[in-house]
Image (cartoon, rainbow, N blue to C red):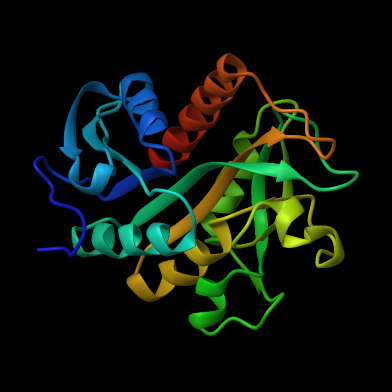
Length: 226
């Protein structure tokens, strides 16, 4: 039995990972026919169901930050997950994308403690699964782009991200650690991020963020169905 998740429904081989439990419910209702709650332990809501095309899919929340995310990923791998796409949020860095844009992550530069503890050098670039990234790039809608991001333990402003980044256009709290941990667990992983806040601090409204999450979730589910 995994250490954190206590599944009460099947776990699919493919998973969409989100930080927020409420967003997991939102995407389960958007992506799955008759979703069943598969986990509520520790407030990490997860759901199992079938896409309209008949493919099994898990939607699982990972909580806030890298330590929670990699712990959940380890449990999912133990339960049979082989492919995962993170659908998360990020903050744009100076001269970066506008709020609402979708980013297919080409690499995540590691400035977070979990990635460093797993052996990545500070500032090292962690790659997603090449097949999943190619599919994400191919399916990105107009207004989306593929780009590198940086991952920190704190929000970008508190982490001093401006002095630490190079070509990265946005910052988040989880992606580098998930991409670092996934290969050792036998999971092919990639990340699709919503720019929830621009470099000037302007944030998406709750309604706009929900719509962006639905778009990103549909894209992630589509590439996992191929």
